[in-house]
Image 1 (cartoon, one colour):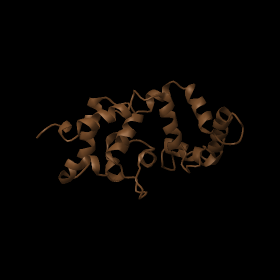
Image 2 (cartoon, one colour):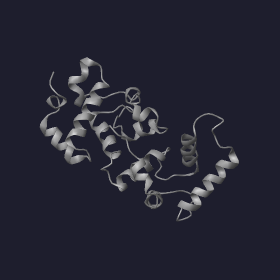
Image 3 (cartoon, one colour):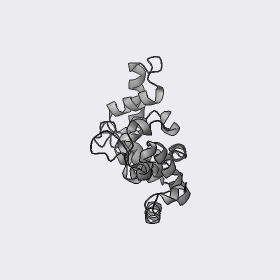
Image 4 (cartoon, one colour):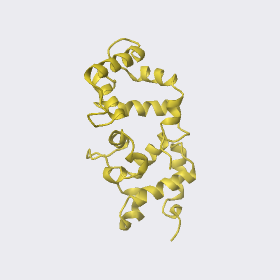
Length: 190
């Protein structure tokens, strides 16, 4: 059986290199990983096939991520709302989470992932969901209402520069710029 590159046209490989932060080897590995999520009889057409979200979530890198469903949602171009992914969606996701992606790109996508209601700002409800994702789903892990309110108040006090009660993208990026660990921790390694 030929290598993964025999199923990925050379022109497509070159285009993917130009459009992502991934190198040739990373793209070929991504293609192999994506193809393996498909039934054997559909692997030859991996570039034109969508993988269901349930299969994407079997990847170890996502399985342990508390934002796994939001990540799939943000990177999916599915018009059905099922958050399935095409190979290009998958590449976009891996590109944003790669070490080579810029902090600007990483922060823009992190903001979208954390903006649960997709209204363009992180409000109190988004921040509460974000904290709940980070602390775990069990009742014993959740903050009580007083702790949650204090934490959200502290986050807004630190981040909400225009004092409108929400965090917009520019404010989010300002906070991220003061957190050098953010870029290195916002990644998925193949």
